[in-house]
Amino acid sequence: MPRTERRTSSVIILCAALATALPRAQEHQMHHGAPVDRVGSVHFENSCSPDVAKDIDRGVALLHSFWFDQAIAAFKTVAERDPACGVSQWGVALGMWGNVLAGGPQADGVATAWAAVERGRQMGSKSEREHGYLDAAAALYQNASTSDARARKLAYEQAMANLAKKYPSDTEASVFYGMALVGTHLASDKSYAKLLAAADVLDPLFQKMPDHPGLAHYIIHAYDVPPLAPRAVDAARRYAAIAPDAPHALHMPSHTFTRLGHWRESIESNTASAAAARRAKSPGDELHAYDYLVYAYLQTAHDRDALRVIETGRSVGRAAAAGGLGQGNVAAAPGGGVGAYALTAMPARYVLERGQWTEAAQLQELQGATPAVQAMTLFTRALGLARGGGDLVAARSDLATLVSLQQKLAGNNQAYDAEQVEIQRRSVEAWILHAEGKTAGATALMQTAVAMQDKTEKSAISPGPLAPARELYAEMLLDAGRLLEALEAFEASAQQEPRRFRGVHGAARTAALLGNLAKAQKYYGELVAIAEGGDTPERPELTEAKAYLAKTR
Image 1 (tube, one colour):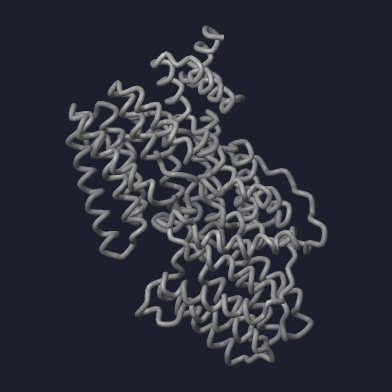
Image 2 (cartoon, one colour; image 1 turned 90 degrees about the vertical axis):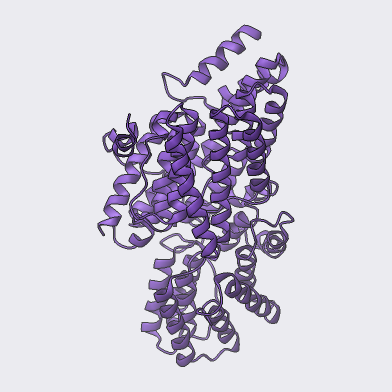
């Protein structure tokens, strides 16, 4: 098929009819003591009118569950009802930043947030402590034209550290300080110093206040790396019940479940989150939940469910882009934010996880996508061309574009995204070399991609890389007949990405080829357990697993 036809043809998933919306999530029981809209209970001491005290508490609870548009609206209502309540503008400014793990708003948002800080200072406050909160929020926006987002997040972290130290009885200061520490953790820091420091602040408070939404939420983030994830299980299983109406509270436990390969719990978590986000007309949250949901469905061989979610996500994206879903459209619109990431990642995962190389080679970029998002499609397409016996000239063309995108990201000081694209670039080039019969050079280059990925962590926006570098390396070794090395690589990959369908199958097949009966039975048995209740007819890998187990047991 000519290259132009490949670029314009539709993949199977593009041709499927729009699916019906996901089933509504089971209603969670109302948590004792929670407000009527069930976002959790917090108490923020303030000097404002007693008439707005509950509204302030609710606004803070909304901030803790990253429901930022609702939080901003709540704090604006407080300001209308009490024009002397300066701390209301702290809530607006903090909500304008959004997720402290991210880089904050664009220039117009920075200007709006800074205006809120100044307005809060003019409104005044009877409390020096409240002035401290406003000063901390100001640190996120001050000198925005001359300092980068990380420098300002570090200034915010220090301001919250000072506030928590000065007011040791102020639980909320400590809670926000804990998340500020998480927000300045670098993905390349394998000592996890900031994350562990955050946990030292948050864990003791959670023992005293197990119903606090911010503590449950931020503990999950503090332990959102493979070696630490088991420590977050208690918080993960509590958070959804603490704030059952907050879409992010229903989604966030799946970060831990994904890290541990608890796919059923991740499916339940994200099904509930997507339903809550739809009710709240929050397409960004809905699409974010869908990406995690697709990932979990694919690990369990529920491919039809994954396809249904992808199509539902596309319909959400179209409606959001047209402005038909109310607030949150910017995050969901093609080209920007978590929504663009999900709309690009989901179809890429669908073809990569199932080894559909011909379909992968036909993926098309999302219109207006940012360089990091565009790179995901190019990575998937070039990998499909290289592994599916396709046009290697076309693969190298996509590879050249990946190089250009990586350079653009590096030039824009987007170091993390530039590094992720460089890992993708090396992986693609390695598979092109392998397809050309240059396996020695291919495996050597693939090793460099593995080494790079070992030194970083996935972004919180994603349940995992589109294809883990070490898993790709193991598959290349298996294809080259280097079986002992392949099995070692598959097993090492599982330490970072446990219970992945492709990884477990690769380990099982390699062990069987080696004649290692014990390991082959172990991994084939694990594969069958992971995919229990999956689609019928089943994936060929499952037929293979069941046949092997029947023959050898």
